[in-house]
Length: 92
Image 1 (cartoon, helix red, strand yellow):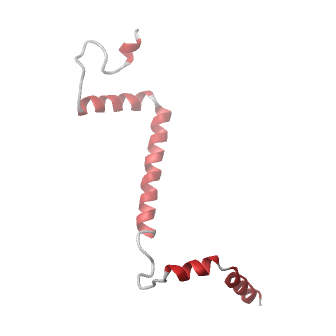
Image 2 (cartoon, helix red, strand yellow; image 1 turned 90 degrees about the vertical axis):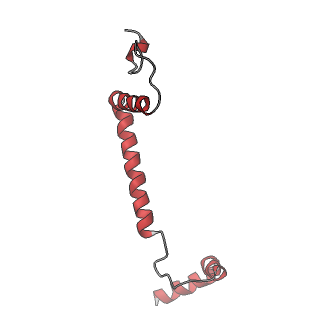
C-alpha cells in the first residue's frame, strides 16, 4: 500500500476538481480524523451560540430613549469620589 493510495482522490481516477472534489475531501477528513471533527463541530456550535447571544442581548441598548453624553459617562466611571460616596451611603 503506497501513501498515495490512501488518499480518496488518488489512484487511476482522473483528478477531480471543483465542488465534487471538495466534498470528497471533506468526507475523507470527517472519516479519518474524529478528534479534529469533534473539535470543529464544538467550535462551530460555540460560534453559533455566541452569535445568537450577541444578537439577542447586545445588538441595541435596552433603554433606547436613554442616552448619556460620553463625557458624563467617562467622568462617572473614572471619578473615585463618586464611588466612595455611594459606598458610604450604602453602609448607612
